[in-house]
Amino acid sequence: MTRRQVSVTTTVAASPEQIFDLLTDPAKHPLLDGSGTVQAAHAGNPDRLELGSKFGMDMKMGAPYKIRNTVVEYEKNRLIAWRHFNGHRWRWELEPAGEGRTSVTETFDWSTARIPFLIELARFPAKNKAGIRKTLDRLAGMFGENGSQSSQTSQGS
Image 1 (tube, rainbow, N blue to C red):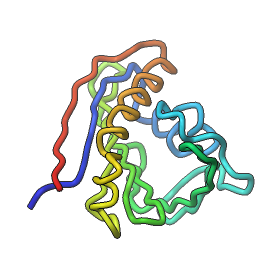
Image 2 (tube, rainbow, N blue to C red):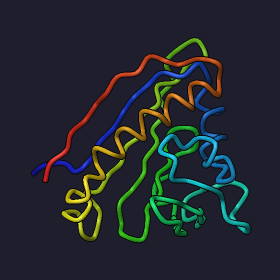
Image 3 (cartoon, rainbow, N blue to C red):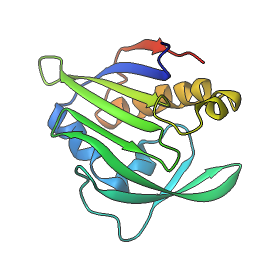
Image 4 (cartoon, one colour):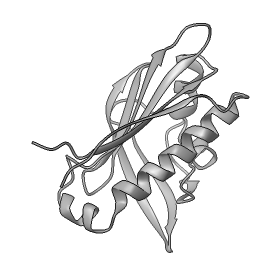
């Protein structure tokens, strides 16, 4: 079985708690996004995300649109993932890396998508991997450093 995921990992000069605090605040997502698609958080979003939280974003990919997400994985200060209406997920994993540093892995996982071949046909895995790299660069920059980046990728059709 092929895994339908693309991931990028970087090390950030911040604690898992500091990074998780940023990830669980949906109002901060537009500041973090390196893809240029996340425009603004919806009014009425929760202040902090937790398992089962629903939150919305104004998006733009060519044309503007709105998206609603649900948090489907959650382990405080270690893991958060949300899914879109089509079932694909965005996952963040945080591992302490010593001396106030954290290994951060962001994953686009379309193995749970309702129609995964359309995601592949539209070349979203490659586009999203490039966006993930930029997002992780932004994240590292928010804590005053670029971080050392390595790529871990597996994708299939």
